[in-house]
Image (cartoon, rainbow, N blue to C red; front, side, top):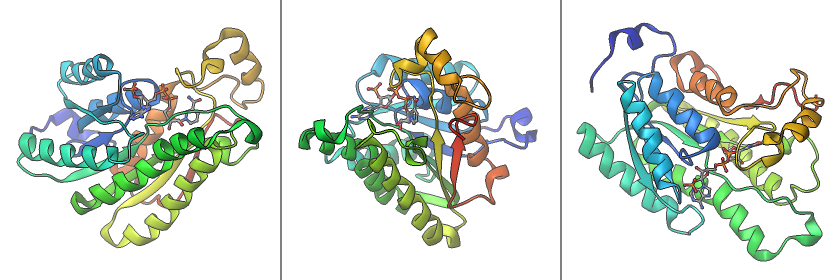
Amino acid sequence: MSQNRSQNQTPDSLVGKTALVTGASRGIGRAIALALGKRGAHVAVHYNAAGDAAIEVAGLIQREGGHAWTLQADLSQADGAATLARELRRTLLERNGVDGLDILVNNAGVGLRALLADVTPQDFDRVLQVNLKSPFFLIQQTLPFLRGNGRIINISSMGTRAAYPEMSVYAPAKAGLEALSLLLAQQLGERGITVNAVLPGATSTDLNPRARDPELSRVIAKSVALGRVGQPEDIADIVAFLASDQGRWITGQRIDATGGQRL
Ligand SMILES: NC(=O)c1ccc[n+]([C@@H]2O[C@H](COP(=O)([O-])OP(=O)(O)OC[C@H]3O[C@@H](n4cnc5c(N)ncnc54)[C@H](OP(=O)(O)O)[C@@H]3O)[C@@H](O)[C@H]2O)c1
């Protein structure tokens, strides 16, 4: 793999590392892919439907002198995670001659605003599949080629620490992801692999149109200590820190990434 001298010198350098970011076509995942690529990682930019957007993200990384490629998989399908892991391994080998993965970011997610009384079994299955079951099996399928001192970073939500009744399925799914992060941190510590959950608050993306709306975002901002809603880059910088050598001593943690929302 090519090494860029200036990237090598920064303490947050990811030169020589490979990464998969799920849901990297838009929103927070896009910002994470760009942040990892900027620091020198070779980034697999995963998407489901937004192929053009994913190609644009990979192109932006390449234009900055980085390395990136796209991978498609529908994580609402039972075999989505296995398909993605297989394609990732194949393309890593093809591109780098070795199939080792260093950084897995489980970011892809779907939202659902519904009170318990209004949730259908189909809604429940879809939210659990994308937000918990697919990350679970993606970790299972990538662990055989996740290198020592690797990173697993699971994107959760502050909805697991503050009560939002309309997150009746979404928050329990994210809570499951956090529980998984904790036990895996214990299990994988002997390989030097860290596992953490990052909990964004209201962040301006397609998934949270209220945080995008100028008026509603001002209302939300009143509940945030730092006085504004989050931007995808706010979350991406935290993930990049955890992914770097600087984050080597943090594992099994739920890291609040909210600017102090509902403290
Ligand atoms: N925004 C917030 O306020 C907020 C707050 C807390 C936590 N989060 C969490 O942050 C993560 C990113 O959210 P975001 O706000 O950036 O969302 P977003 O802008 O809606 O982007 C969602 C990403 O997930 C991918 N995705 C959705 N369904 C998929 C499926 N069935 N299979 C594979 N990929 C799928 C999308 O891919 P395509 O574009 O290709 O369809 C897209 O790249 C999620 O886990 C979310 O729960 C967000």
